[in-house]
Image (cartoon, rainbow, N blue to C red; front, top):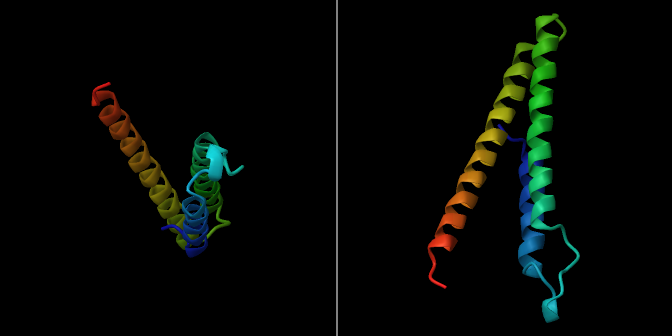
Length: 103
């Protein structure tokens, strides 16, 4: 499961983006992160969750970690990967919809 802190940070970031509308008056960008940067951060956080899950599993195999910690880390990784896959599917669907539009 995603922790409440991670969810709160994601909602706060989305709120900041929605408040500025993605751009300032005059068509200038707001100086906020680009879509590519947001995507890179999302993939990085999924990779970090996977690494944490792997390290917890290795620690449990060597007798240094609790089973509950491993289950929690694996569940967080599962949620992160599922979210990333859902976003990817939505981006692909949006691209296909745009390509079907008449010029």
